Amino acid sequence: QVQLVESGGGLVQAGGSLRLSCAASGRTSSTYRMGWFRQAPEKEREFVAAINWSGRNTYYSDSLKGRFTISRDNDKNTVYLQMNSLKPEDTAVYYCACAATINSYYQFLRGYDYWGQGTQVTVSS
Image (cartoon, rainbow, N blue to C red; front, side, top):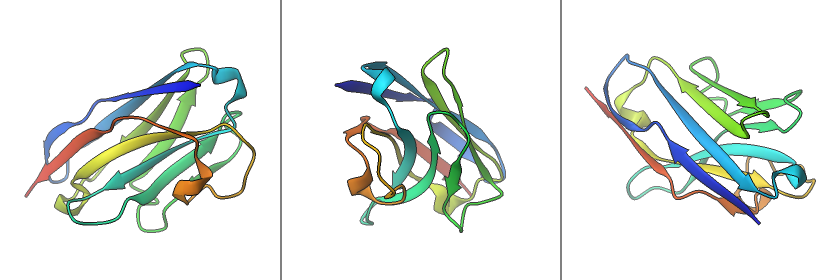
């Protein structure tokens, strides 16, 4: 089992920045990949970014590339999502996810085995 706890969400004005953190605990040695997803009200959960545990490979939603950056600190078992130039349409609950098995479904929900509870990000105009 892997437990994930997100933090860093909040209210920010358009154009501002936030850094989300996801602390992993439990069987982190078996972690293959970490990802961030988000879900806006009345919308489906969508892929934001992912990073494999070695950090050699990162993946981004095409629409967010250039504004969001995913990184990880293995010593702290923590993954980060740096979000810059935030827009009101970035308002959503952001979820951290962990894939414990090797797979290529980095942008799909089914590619992940564990999920955090989410952290709210609200961008005001």
